[in-house]
Length: 404
Ligand code: DP6
Image (cartoon, rainbow, N blue to C red; front, top):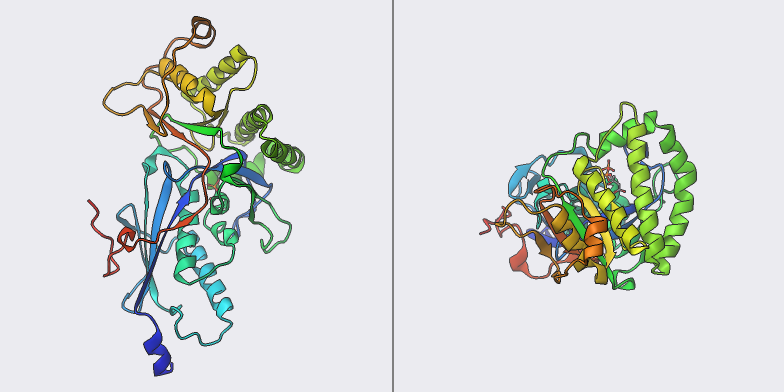
């Protein structure tokens, strides 16, 4: 190495980004390539606002670091995890390609070891799709560190399939792609978060329990054993995807909500069709489903729509003018066990009194404590760069800051 070039290299570089969680309304379930994480069908999601749910990640590189290191929520974690390594390798490959082998003396050396610290602003144990936000954030922070400006959903996909959709805000499609190398399996923004200002999201956190079968293992068993999943991927999803895009374009809540519920139900049906079967929805989740249908039936149209991923938490879509009433319905159906913790969190929720006819038609025997809390949020933007250096999760020594 030429001494002049070496001197010009920066000794320590650091970048911090935040990234959002997303919730699919046309579900991804099943891979055609498990290594490259290529799906058997396209999917479509809504990116949730980072004011309520986000991951923050700082990536640093220095000639003084002796090994790659990773900290998750303050605890050291395995940086050798194959998916973390895949993301790192891909980002570095792109950085190398970008430099075209030419000597860019001011560029950060690609041979430096890196330190990564990542944390969530929500309890990881709550099962709120933290891997999507986590990998989207990792890739965004690494890209910043190495000065990459291209679209990187293809890299985030290597961390976790659903993570590619967290690389954009608003309404996002992950197109399955056709090529065996995965170069056309990427995320595309269908509409920005400003497209549907009245849309709201309620996350009903029902349980801190770990899910019985993780998505990665579960979907593989489904691919191997479920004929329903094959039919879904080949026939159902292509039709639904086109319909869902139209409902979003037209801001048609009736169509959007109906299809979101049907697609969630079909995903869980493919889990039951998997052999041995997988059950992600406990009693409380089914109670919420029944409650949503009674509520909609009472109003004579779709006011709320539920969707469930590989776990028991319900994600409810509603328009802003429905939130207060439905939250009251949930509170009455699942009265909080303790008054200590806030039952409703996130965006403010107004108060609503339930008309007696609604109470009679919609409420049944309450199940106290079944819903831990409700998080009120809305669609939000994609990954963000954090400019303020005081927000870095790593200190000038490259180690996690002891945060109060
Ligand atoms: C049910 O993206 O977590 O949430 O690609 O193996 O990491 P891997 O799986 P993951 O699966 C998400 C499945 C889902 C549906 C969805 O988000 O589309």
